[in-house]
Image (cartoon, rainbow, N blue to C red; front, top):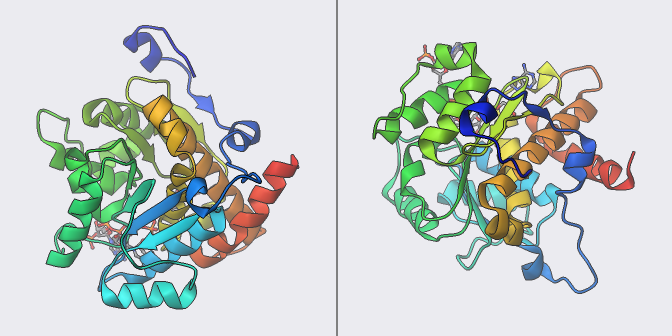
Length: 294
Ligand SMILES: NC(=O)C1=CN([C@@H]2O[C@H](COP(=O)(O)OP(=O)(O)OC[C@H]3O[C@@H](n4cnc5c(N)ncnc54)[C@H](OP(=O)(O)O)[C@@H]3O)[C@@H](O)[C@H]2O)[C@@H](O)CC1
Ligand SMILES: Nc1ncnc2c1ncn2[C@@H]1O[C@H](COP(=O)(O)OP(=O)(O)O)[C@@H](O)[C@H]1O
């Protein structure tokens, strides 16, 4: 992804469409020497008393994407629901290689405990996937960040950024999502994954990547929480690549997550309606097919 052109020239360049071959290169396959820690541990601060379901969906998706371990740290009821669905998940704090924060949370209704858990993740210095109700906290992250907003959430993230960042409304973003993904990446200094029928992924100052892999049936509650889980697992299993390639690696991982999510949606849908949990359950077969080259 080396690109030596001037910034203006890059901005006007045609975006790259992310395809199966690109995605395959960003799936970490365990080797004989691996153990659960060397594969990567994902920390999750997601869900809340109001939205426990988002925590379950993200945890299910991350587990099915493949990761050494998931540490889930959330509100008691959400923790109970996550463990009921996925007993493999550990609810004790400890070291992680990446964080997923914010899915199923609200910036305007944050408990003291949630605020404390979010602050610990933001201070950790490891890569962060920031979604939904933590998008007002992007500037506080010590580690490299990829954000996963929809149009309204990107408007909120830009408004919270201050410091001269542009403040478009959601409808302005909807009218020019590719352009706003680029402007947001530049203004926030993070990799942006802007969700939609076509998902736009941009690392700051780099060419835009587009992903159009899923059916419109994916426009259903919780679908984005599943995408967050897929991306969290991919980042946790590529900590070394993120340390070496920074925002470019986060962009490649984000585009891969959108591609896998879209194909899982296609597989779960088969031309009909889907629920978000079915999308998460379809992920392993999509990865098997991708690795087998089909
Ligand atoms: N299972 C779970 O736990 C799930 C949890 N989830 C979690 O929920 C959190 C919030 O995520 P979100 O995307 O809903 O929030 P947000 O961008 O603030 O949207 C609010 C906007 O929507 C609009 N609006 C509302 N109703 C409308 C209607 N009937 N028809 C039309 N418009 C309507 C409303 O407009 P208004 O009613 O004010 O006019 C406002 O503008 C987030 O943490 C996410 O992870 C979700 O992923 C779902 C599954
Ligand atoms: N029309 C569409 N076609 C294909 N995918 C879509 C469409 N609308 C939304 N999606 C996808 O569905 C997911 C919705 O995420 P989001 O809006 O965050 O929902 P939620 O907050 O309910 O989980 C995103 O991955 C997005 O790319």
